[in-house]
Image 1 (cartoon, rainbow, N blue to C red):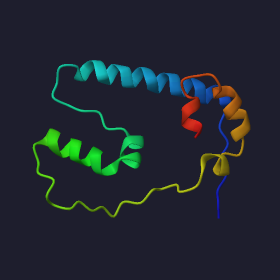
Image 2: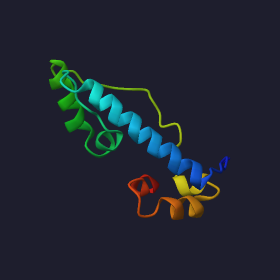
Image 3: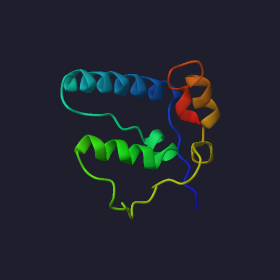
Image 4: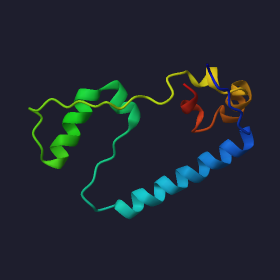
Length: 102
C-alpha cells in the first residue's frame, strides 16, 4: 500500500533554500578540517569507488568486504508518492532544486 503525501510547493522551496544555507554554513565551519563530502547519489551510482575513497580518507584498507543490512526506506518513485507532484515540479522548475525531482 502506497501512502500519498502532499506538500506545499511554496513551503518546499523555502525549506530547500533554508537547507541550502545550512549546508553552506556547515561547509564553512568545516573549512580547513580534514574531511570529505559524501553524496548519496555518488554512492548509488559508483558505490565501490565511493567506498574506496571513504576508506582511503579514513586510512583503512579495502581488502575486507563491507556489507550492510540497511534498506532504502522509500523504494517508490517520488511522483508515485507525492500527491501533488505536478504542482511541486512546476514550483521547482528552473531552480537549483529541480534536480531532486528525478
